[in-house]
Image (cartoon, rainbow, N blue to C red; front, side, top):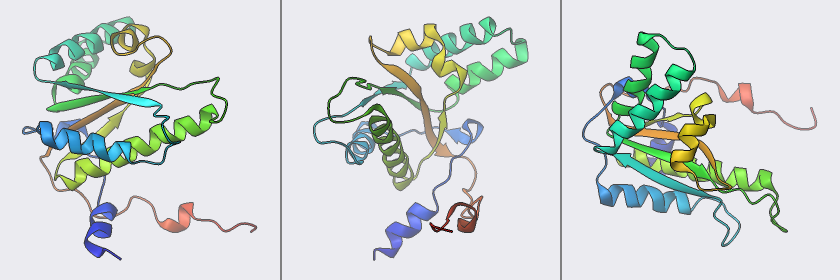
Length: 188
């Protein structure tokens, strides 16, 4: 058993975007994170996802999309400011785009979604291994047509975003839940 690797994995937690700051990962680190995502459980050549990196000046374009969506939802000035901050706070945002083939003869859609989740998990673990922190965001913005159109090609689904940066506070090493809450033996 590789105890240091296991300890690192067991210490991974999400950290809200207000606690993510510069610097963000560089190009080599981002490629390593994507390489980790590619090693998630899959179905051979079928990769039912892709990732779109948003950083630098592109974060302002993402902020405008978030602000426009907040306005369509009737948010007040404070709500609009929060949405803007979600796009601008983290030095790196990665859009997770699912390419689910509903007619695939061998791999049903639910298994393809499991592959998307595995890729996200591996990506997040690689983020943590590099010393960064991350937060996965989705919600109604991922389903907003104007935002999805900015990221997706026909037949794709915007699953959400991963915001990545340097943590500005210590990550908790305590689990939020006890394993007994989620581990059950069957039959009972």
